[in-house]
Length: 219
Image (cartoon, rainbow, N blue to C red; front, side, top):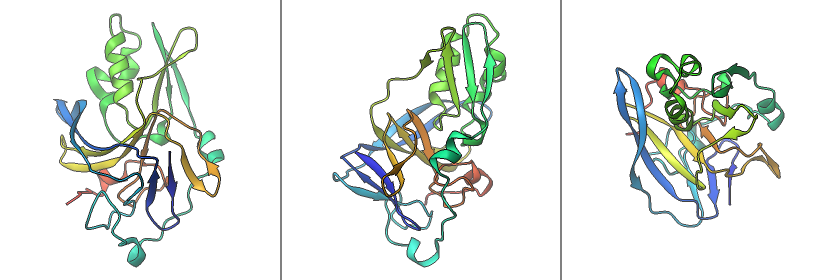
């Protein structure tokens, strides 16, 4: 089971990893509340997902990358490990915020922002909901003993549609699926991560929120 990144090509998924489409439910204004699975794709044990944004058969690759897609240099495991992370201390939980991983999902803005909620009483469940719905893993919470608190995701992949703002989002990889960026070189396994599928991220293979600025729509 893994995702292998093909240079200038698609994501090759192996190991019979389930593939879904998920949309978000509106909370207030442009802030979402939760993710909702709306479709399960029929897949084989191995399949290829588009990462250039050009396929006419999204989310699957149709070979369109051969014409126009030249991918920038992928970041390495060392690059990922060196991303700036800021720790915020709260009443019940502490928060690790790795801002460069932000995929512009906006769950963190709920009720004034997760950073303010950390120091409000009775907000434990809301803080967990916000963190677990952050698909990129930018937000990670810890208890006061330093133990990471995570949702118990099964290995799966979701194609995200940001219906709240009417745009298409990244690929959400859950449950510790290994991601191979060079032959036998893997990123640190994480419970939540988002991969670029518009082809425009400056942080490839990871989403950096550029799909919002580019108004990317999977049509």
